[in-house]
Amino acid sequence: MSSSVSSIPIDRTSPVPLYFQIAQHLERAIESGELAPGAQLENEVHLAAQLGLSRPTMRRAMQYLVDRGLLVRKRGIGTQVAQSKVKRPLELSSLWDDLVSSGQQPTTEVIANESSSAVGEVAHKLTLPEGTPIVVLERLRYARGEPLARLRNYLPAGLVPALTTGALQQQGLYKLLRASGVTLHAAAQTIGARAATQAEARLLGETKGAALLTMERITYDDRGQVVEYGTHIYRASRYFFELSLLAH
Image (cartoon, rainbow, N blue to C red; front, side, top):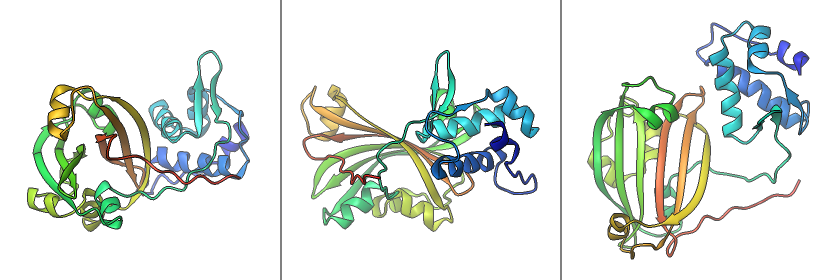
């Protein structure tokens, strides 16, 4: 692994963050097979020293690849290249885009559109210092007049100047991001399930304990910056995730 690391070209004058330059190089090495599944990586201290970088920069590069499922951390073993997986062709789209394309006539009720400060888990997910100004959005998305999902999003303040309640009622968040010049590049997404609380059931027109699908997503731009952290819940009785899988 040391030869692969020592050959990583780093442009310290580039606007692209150093951690993202490293992550992209390692991602290409993994996808090309130069770094094979199961290959052991040296620890972050040694890798950072080889490149003349700080340990936090190297840790962030590695965590980006862990979040994308390309690396795995194993207790007592260290960091390894993940075993080959079935590759999923994904389109980075919003629920609004998906509903429009399927003729579901989406509408949106904006529950919250407010300024706040990044703290705790939100600051960690957005990779922002505690207290950094952010925008908190909470929306109820309808399809054909029925509630379908509650969407909660956290974004760095000032990312989308025209993020008005009116705009959020008429368009999807990703469309507004793109219109403001943000290039959406990649996302790390986790899908799960749980039972609805009483408040969630009331909001979505379900009974307490009804099955909900959950989704957590961290979205990155083309410079590797986190531009959005979302936590969403969907009515399992009205919605499912469909993936097309390709065998390699």
